[in-house]
Image (cartoon, rainbow, N blue to C red; front, top):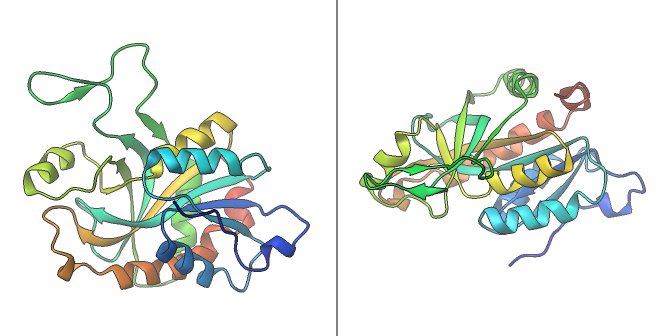
Length: 231
């Protein structure tokens, strides 16, 4: 597992950063840090490692310090979003959670912890506006983002997960959301799209473009006015 790392120069700042950004892997971290070079004290960026459990643990530990917001930020596979999309969570849904029924579907029995976290609508709107204001080639898509225990690798799994109505899948959002919710801090998951969900044809993935979009949008997402009125 990778260690937490902060934006260069942030460790020299005596004032606590305002926004906590959680990335899963080094490439996502590097892309976000490139975007924040001109404003290194606007956020604390960490690498949580892959999956919702490590994301929850590292986010909870980081939230020992005060933040006004948390972002789960990275790249993702799309169910319905286009390749140039920036997906902003309206809800974060944990799949394969609860009880599996005879038809293969899952349900959450009464009394179990939630498998869905709703994003603050006003915050979703302000982040979408901030990205639109960049006048870039990004298409903003607001919708449910699925947190999966394993990345989809077959058309059959893709069809089952697509039926949830989510626009994209990733592996950390629910863990970050659970930690932020427990600490009472507003949170969003935002993903740029690298591939279409389904059989893993990595030759067709646009990972570099998705990472470049992270760099492009990162400064807009940490603007004080985006978070100052949360939720």
